[in-house]
Image (tube, rainbow, N blue to C red; front, side, top):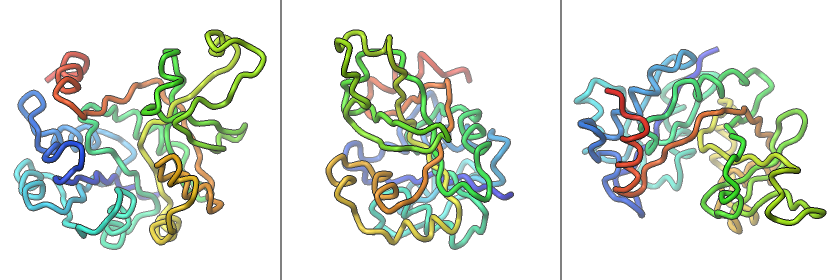
Length: 245
């Protein structure tokens, strides 16, 4: 089974323009993401998908594989869909371009649940910090006994009715969503043509579009934290926690 890792990377990010090229301990962030992804044993190839010449030049400069894609794409999934046309495979894993210290084991863990029946896959991690339950920037997810997602939300789900809020984590396990996705090739071709759904628009979460259209999202559990970079403070924190070379 061939699995290709794709790193969507935009220069004109609305929140942090030029973020893929920001220096992280002597290397551009996109290079660190690429190098970490390339360590995953499950991936046959890693490709950066961009719409900016500066990022393309950077990736070529450090010897990576890159493909220029349309500027009109609305999200990383659409960008992955264009790459899939040029790079045939059974599955594609969408790796966030702002995770310079992603663990290869996270990618391999997601790949381990992929088979012919898996339509879509993603990662979840058990929440240990009670303060995250009410943080709308931390996506919560519920799933069934077959590890298929019920719902993703910025709100705390589920509501633990018979206990005070401070005791909820004593009575139920909560999981947060780690933003890495796997797509079966035929499913990827279909979901890029779906229109926005009401739940997606309400929560601003793309994966709700897939659920609302009847697709199944398999979840794999990880014990690794994600380390996304959005601010200069995030860079300092990530370096202190993760930089080893």
